[in-house]
Length: 527
Image 1: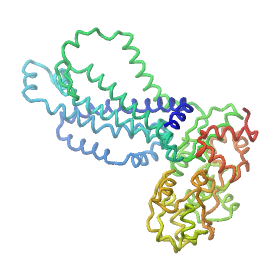
Image 2 (image 1 turned 30 degrees about the vertical axis):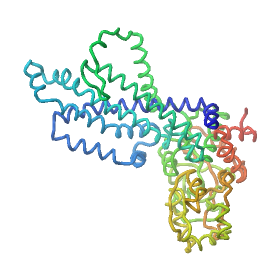
Image 3 (image 1 turned 180 degrees about the horizontal axis):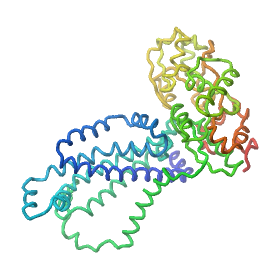
Image 4 (image 1 turned 90 degrees about the horizontal axis):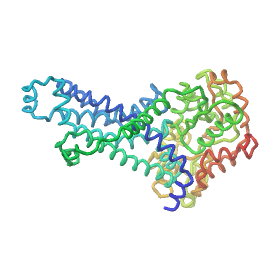
């Protein structure tokens, strides 16, 4: 546990910022869900023919995996906090709508008839009889939604919305349990705090004598207690306003700034911070970091839509995964093709290569290498029917990954293929759950886990030289950016990039520190 406390101590500011982001996003989403859900629940109580379809629809949404829902929303809404909030709102509707409907429908008919008998209007019956009696059940639904929203919001880090999920995803990528706990424990505490706050709100608004969801009964004695001072009410209202208003401002009131993105692994986080630091040091432009996005589809899609202005991609990925071209093995040919075709396809310029080639590689433990006497991918293919491949989901479905690899090596017939994302594939390999993983030639985890890379003897994997991508529109507005970002040309070798990744993955230095230290060391930015 000492390692965990040391991590928290060294990263208190970051954890605090991410916790505040998480709280803002969660509160905003839950408030929207309540504003939408309660009126819907009331309406389907009045118009019973709509009850089953509405409840069925909200149930179907609950059944859809959260990542699948995000994947559906991204093409239409983009990245950032907006799709994350919409996702959480949709997931939060079912308990709120259902509990509102159930609470109102369970009120005895005799009670409603009595209310009508004393001359109350439908609106008065709703406000003075139905809602007070149904309030415990309604609030139970809100409590469930609020607590669930905290956990769901961790997924928002996948699309650059921030929050505590950033630490969880980063920890998974780097096999760092301390980092995972630094994100998970505050999220758990936040869920308990929100549940407590909602329970206090429930108690304060409940009528006297009504049993609450947790069995408490608000008695009349409470009514005689001194009312909350006006100053305290104003303070509470101000806090809620700031949380919601801050989120709205963050989501919708963005100033003109350069947005730098990255994909969701260590090397990308380092490179993304390098681009941002260079722009901040060499220009007067304001920079926003939208790092730790999903894979190529998410990051490149965000670039095309103008949600980010620049990020680092790899020539082989651009050729095969983006342009859908045949595999090429000559680095200059690949760079020439993507340099010509990417601007035509997406109005995005390909800048000068940074220097290193982060190509795919197949890695195994030294024990299995010795057991089967392996040196090359061809050697491994001959015994692949006794091996399990534990690759990333992206690698398993790419033509420049497993799909094309098994065509190039026809003897390759694994006993099983188990897609495992991020750093978890290293854990699965070292635990003996798998025998072969896909890796990157510059990955610091290769050194950490003492793995051996098989020689690609048939030269299947294309070159993956790192190149900055920048929107043409951004360069037209700020032409100085091209010169600034091209200062990275040929500055990082394969060995150097692996060293930088090692510092982040193994020595547990923050990617932003690794990036900045390198730029200072190379004299590219001032201290």
